[in-house]
Image (tube, rainbow, N blue to C red; front, side):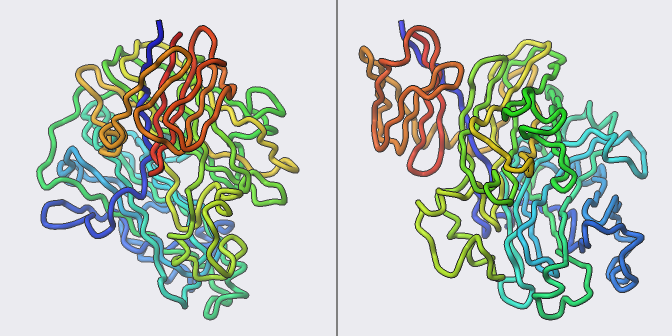
Length: 464
């Protein structure tokens, strides 16, 4: 007997047309309004008087450092959250003309606290992005990043969480002005690097409390400049030194009828031969079973060239082909890093484990790492409210799996079909095809990954 079990997956981010983010049918909550960030290697006390004069110190922002800010959401703001939720981040150019990593987080802070220590606080990353190479004197001088974060609505409406914690929204952006001090007109001796604006967009009608929601933080990335993330060489950064494999365990407190994991990763290390420039398959195992396979990177970074107004070695002087971009690009300066949603379905309470393996990752000269953020969401009744893009994965493709002997047909032509054994070893790969041979699959469980022409992925478990 052979049967297929679909594992629904989606990569969220940059999926909402910018012009439709806010209109008369939505409610907008602006959390940050052109907040100014400064030299990440300096302290707030150490920045110049001219830099300090740029800040409104009574703007309601808790500044943990020059690169990490936080704003507490009020009960009135939380009461406006609807079932649908999207997020617009806008970065403005000041005096950092390089590509930097930034992210938006939620911090769960004990009720009533006026401040908190980020290193001792439960935090969730809900959106990551890479700034473009920007010269503040050349238009466009800002770049938008759009996210569908419907799953975050359940967190903001979780009354059990809100009874214990205040929810703070962190805006983290580490920038360095040193190159711009020399290369960008008007940036000599300046320490300001970027501005950041953050807006939540939701339904005009608030949604009821999410009283069946289950949230379990799994891992929160560390700042890239501090290291200590996922790699092959750091203490605690790998299960086996020399191999890029790492396992995280977590406890689900109740049985859930539906669930998913939200995963964010990006490869960094810009040294010669660094992992930043090497596209590799990332394999995700859940409770010992291969569950999801993905390769970071876009088909092309050309849509983001317009924001890269500072000449740089990534974009070069002229457009590149899709194949050229895919030969080295793990992400695009000026683009989001995907939030990947891995759907697990019903799950029993107790301990579970997630493992990520990146075969072949080298981290030349012990430089670079893969910042990983991950959290679990489930519901004790009904189905988990998934972001809209999850529905599009199923509805757009509606892939119909049929098996005839050793041939598996998918009912439509796909860009790539890959077949793996349960350990994650590649057995078969075909391009521009509508079927794949199962001859090498043998008895037991296999995994089939389908990459469609529009960039969406599907993953199916094959049981023989």
